[in-house]
Image (cartoon, rainbow, N blue to C red; front, side, top):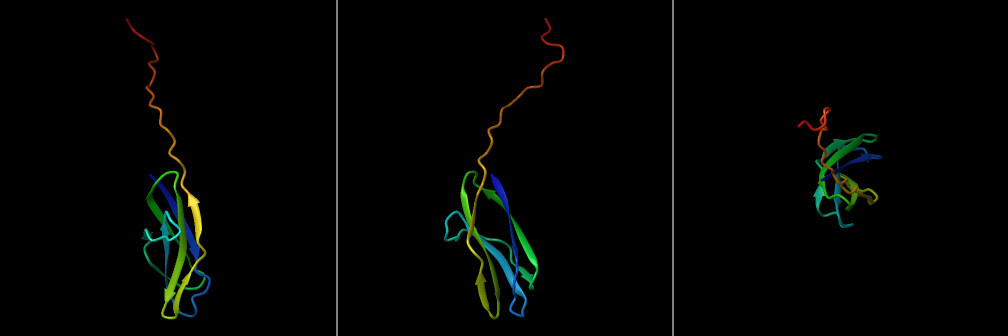
Length: 100
C-alpha cells in the first residue's frame, strides 16, 4: 500500500475560525473519504497523512474550509501513487563457501 501527505493553508477565514479538512478519492467526485477536521484561522497551515492508498492509482483531492459564513472549496488537484517496487529475496552468503 502507498501513502501521501496533503498540505494546505487557510488564506482567509472571513473573520471567524474555520474547520478545515481535505476531501479525496480515486475519482474527481472525491466522495471516498475526508481527513480529520481542524480548527484554523487565516495563515494557519494544515496537513493530513493518508494511508492505505493503492499503488499506481491517481487520486484527487481538495481542501475545504467552513464556518458560519459558509463553505469554500480549494482547487481540485491530483497525484498518482508510485507502483510497488518488486522485492527480490536474497540469502546471506556464507563467508566460507560450501563445506563438504
